[in-house]
Amino acid sequence: MRLGFELDTAATPEQIAKLLELTERYCVVYQTLRSSPVLRTHRGDPGP
Image 1 (spheres, rainbow, N blue to C red):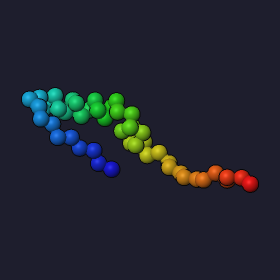
Image 2 (cartoon, rainbow, N blue to C red):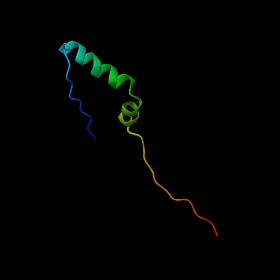
Image 3 (tube, rainbow, N blue to C red):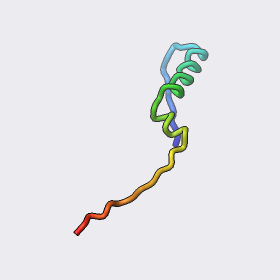
Image 4 (cartoon, rainbow, N blue to C red):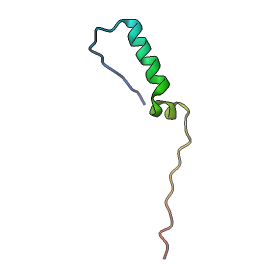
């Protein structure tokens, strides 16, 4: 999975680096995927 950004900004390279750092720190989706969760699928028995 890849995530990319195209920024149209007057921000300095340092500001952009800080933005990436904070995105990685606070994005809950990023944090979940980064920890390599175990994924499983199953189907329940529909019964009689």
